[in-house]
Length: 198
Image (cartoon, rainbow, N blue to C red; front, side, top):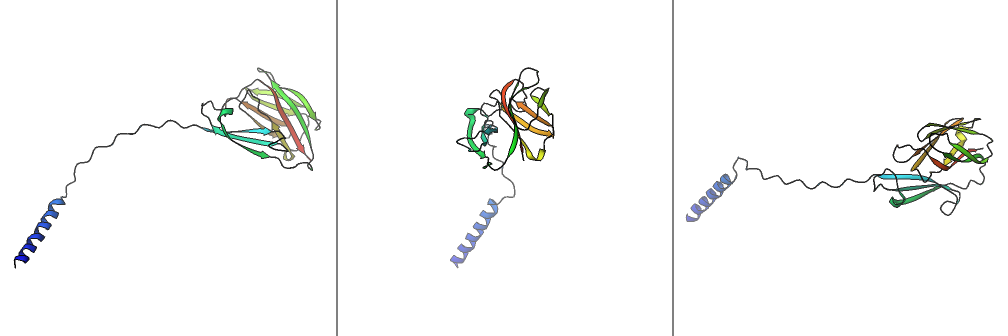
C-alpha cells in the first residue's frame, strides 16, 4: 500500500512539473546578431575575338577568343588580364575558291578613312565615309552576293575592338571602340578583307 501511495505522489509531481514547464506565454526574444562586413565588388568578365593569321595555332587561319576579368575596370581586356585563349580555326579551304578585296585602312581626326589596296581580285573600289566618331561606311562601286561574302578585319593596337558588318549588297560598316560603347577615331593600318566565295 505504501508503494501505491508513492507511485501516485510520483505521478502527481511529474504532472505538476510538466504543467509548470509548459507555460502558454512566449519568452522574450533574443538579441539580433550584428550585420557582417560587405564584400568587395566583383570584376566584369570580358571576351575579345581577334583574327588569327595562318600559322602555328591555326594552319588555315581563324580566330582567337580571349577571355578574362577586367581587373582595372577600364572596359577593355588588357593583355595581362587574359586568363584563357581558345582558337576557332578555319578548315582546309584549299578546294574552295574565292575572290577578295584586301586593304589597309587608316583614319585621322574627322577625315574619311583612306585605303592602301593590297589585293583586288573582286575588281571593285570602296569609298569610305566617316559617319561619326569611330563609325565608318564603305560604299562599293559594284554589288556583291551577300550570302557568299564575309568580311575580316583586325583590331589596331590603339583600340580595344572592331565591329564590322555587311549592310547591303554594296555597303559595309566598321566601328572602332576604345572601351565599352566608346567609339574612337584615329587608327592606322587596320587590315580589312572582303571575301566572296564562288
